[in-house]
Amino acid sequence: MINVSDLDKEQNVVTETKEKYTLDLFAEPEEAQPETFLNRANLGTFQESLRTPVHRWFTYPAGFSYRAVEEAFRSYKIKPGNVVYDPFAGTGTTNVVAKQKGVISFGVEAHPFVQFVAQTKIYWEFDFPALLRQIDRLVEEVGTEVEAATISEIPVESIFPELVCKCYSREKLAKLYLCRESVSRISDVPFRNLAKLGLTNILRSAADVATGWPYIAPQKVKNVASSNRPMDVAKIFKDQLYSMYGDVQMISRTAFPGGKATLIAGDSRQYHEEIADASIDISFTSPPYLNNYDYADRTRLETYFWGDAKTWGDITRNVRTKLIMSATTQINRTGYDEENLLSEAFCTAVPHIAKQLQPKLAQLSKLRLEKGGKKSYDIMVAGYFNDMLQVLQETYRVLKPNASFLLILGDSAPYGVYIPIDIYLGEMGKALGFSHYEVEELRTRGGKWKDNPQRHGVALKECILILRK
Ligand SMILES: C[S@@+](CC[C@H](N)C(=O)[O-])C[C@H]1O[C@@H](n2cnc3c(N)ncnc32)[C@H](O)[C@@H]1O
Image 1 (tube, protein in one colour):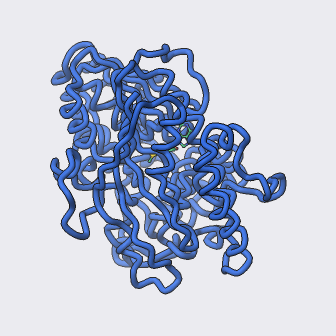
Image 2: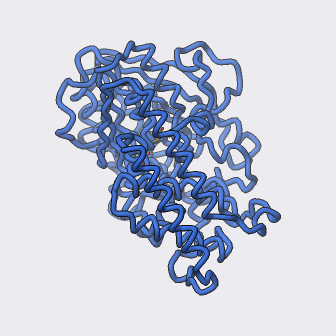
């Protein structure tokens, strides 16, 4: 069953709008903004990345524009041979740009499927004539299989979870299944990854219902006329593969030499021996915002389709538990000491911030009993700062002296309780040894919810926090 009850009611909208592609990262400014190096560049939204070779291979609403990375490199004079680190690599935007520019990069991403996307996007070392032959063979095989199969006999209901079945007609899903099986049989790993991402890319556009959850209820039919129209799945898959072939060939030919991207499937709170002490010239990232966005839910269609998970419980175990705390769906209240939600390490490192947070956490614990949904924002907020302390610590370790750590951030006000994330993270950085920090405002945010009566009226912003080692 589709678990809409677990969606954030304050944020759940059922109309399909352009917001479906854009989390609160680089949306269009709602009012005039002060000039900063990032908004000076008119960065636009992730939409921009959707038009750009390689970046467009996967729509990640949490992703930032590739131009943000380019602009940061320009402002900080990052040159070929320099080393960049993104502790929340997501779909690899930072690493793709770095590799294109001959810059060495490291990225850490904890969500296994998202890490797979990033890994695939940064692999360009194909033998192109051989790749073209592989694509031709796959396309032919898929076409033959779809032609030959008795589609009505493919038991899609027992192959896929109900959520996936709800997204497509039986016939379309059966054809997608045949594509999936052909891709899974490919033995050459780089080609299999490319083909897997290619098929993944068409999953949402091929769906008959809105797939923009957690913000859009999945029951909503996208467009009745188009959902009843038969779709040539094999042809769409073929076009996607040839388009990716063109992208990767172009990017590999135009990239500066010397770029090398290393993506670590792991947790940026932890030590990674691949990244040496004081080896990084700049760290550029966007951590999860404290806005109750569930990354595991966002990729549920993909993980269910590929069989990486079958249930809500599977994605909790396989994904949610690996991520830093930023959504209430990661929380099971049993096992938390409600009086001591901030870790000892946090209280010791930044006692003045702990002192400011404590009353806010107490207020959130009280408010949850009064509000619908009874959201565990108290645990979420405390967990976020406990986790981010470890990420700041580890990033500090790997930065060279005087190097900067740039974080694109959104502040937050769960149940209307304002949490100045930029200031708190800046102060935490200072306590860990960073010499100073500054905050540049990028835009105000939250305006799109202004007509929602359940939503608080606290003004929010997106900003960039710059910590200097
Ligand atoms: C705002 S997104 C970054 C998107 C990225 N800039 C892009 O363009 O694709 C934050 C990412 O942090 C990842 N994440 C959460 N906890 C993590 C952890 N402990 N270690 C590494 N990555 C983590 C999430 O899975 C998510 O992909």
